[in-house]
Image (tube, rainbow, N blue to C red; front, top):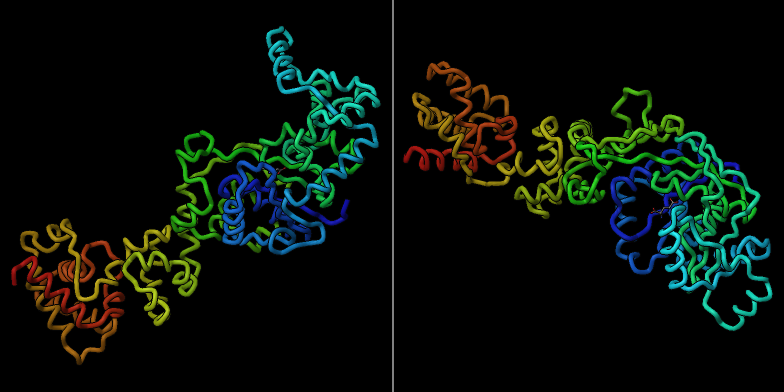
Length: 494
Ligand code: GLU
């Protein structure tokens, strides 16, 4: 085995990359980085009915979006390739040859009907079914060969050693594990059609790719003793295993497609940042010190260790993810924000060409919302008013609460504000405009709120928008005046 750490993430391309898979990928990636090791991406596409090229592409895209760069694997290559199981069939054949030579595998000619009947009979008995009854294990080598030569369909099974004690290993998360040998089936390694089973392919690949640590979901825990028997039969060193507990929803139930968003790209499309999602997923079962919550990639890649993984089920708390995403948005800076927000800016009414033409203007929107967003899909709700041009979409509730409320004098205010904003001698900048409008509190003998709120509604359509004069400064004077005029005429018939 290699003396430096080699780990792999081995998704089956039978669907999108889901949250659980992404966490497994992050742990492997961070562990490789922390140990100065190698992170391998291997695509386990041996199930021809469920594996598709499209799913593979979706997984690679999600991995790239998460920023989980792999050192070996599809698109990057590597000396242990190919990294698609369907391209590795000759290596499984070779491994089977080794097992045959070592007398550790045997052909089994039992038909499906025979096996089904045996299982049914066993299940009817008190002891129940405890695996294949090993009929073909008793065949002599000559007879088996004769039947193979005659073209009789057969699978290849592992000859589980009879003198073996319990299968034991020290899991890096679960601790010492022990499985009695007598429950170990003579499992199928190669099917009638020559394709390898999951357990066989995984062991061949992990052995040939010199994987040192297998970090994966604990749904594979029961496969591990079986896989260890295959390593031993091949005479190859057994890697260290680390099994990760389940991720539960806030309701304490397993995450499911129906009740939760489960794929990485769904989270991307709901406006989560990959930095935040990586941070959040890293903490679902691992902790730096039990308290730090914001852990950037660099820290994660330096500090990640297997001994701080817990075997307690992790709970996916979406409120915490939202909060964390908000923290990342606050820190990301204007340019990165404008770049990441592009689809939602377009949804707000921005023009693709305009975004390309005036990146500085778009960057100026960031301070308006940096502290107010938890997800980027909130951008349209917060910023649509910046793209209305000379129109305003008045929110009814704000109109009744602010503009037409008894004694509000909003029409008077709006006319006075219009005069100020129409005065070209005042620079079109936040501070001087705001100061001049503030003088109205004296002239009109009103509270600041009474002056500013109607302007906010007339410009932004509602009473809860981002900072007002900072917004006004970014829009053309004629558009602001047109919005005030529209409000005066729509609401006051003036
Ligand atoms: N391809 C398997 C899966 O997607 C992973 C196998 C493993 O990590 O050993 O569940």
